[in-house]
Length: 176
Image (cartoon, rainbow, N blue to C red; front, side, top):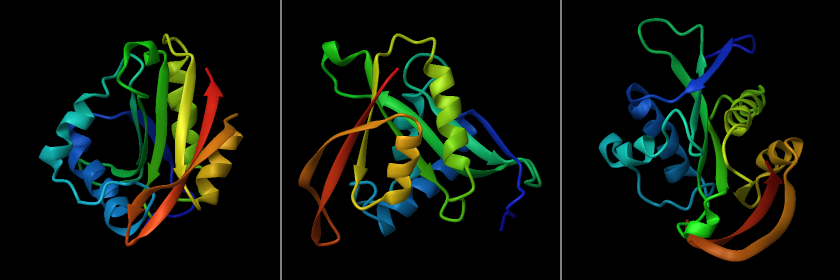
């Protein structure tokens, strides 16, 4: 278990991260309403998602790792992505962003480091706005997004059903 003083490195995600990223995401699929996916993925099923986030362009994957990990692999503490907002061409300058943290990595600034790196990487890209949908309730995510200048724009009420109940999603936007 990492200590509070663990050093964190943020870098672009690479193919060798796929297994750990899939495991991290599957935690949220199985245990929380934070994602509306309802079935866990295999790494092979998640490969197209990883490959849709190259090291350049508006669709990025930034990974936070524990620099004190031993052996050849570093422990992934979380990741942030920018992805297409919607498929139609006029939406091309808008991205949807998200952050997922390992269950024991919250409250240590990892999300802040990930978003800082992601928005720095996007600074030179042809993107105008970032959007974030936050399943409610999720105070930690709301605080993180507000810290980065996101403004609340509305809520889709009972838009997703998971674990036998309906969930709201609050939407936030940020000028880039």
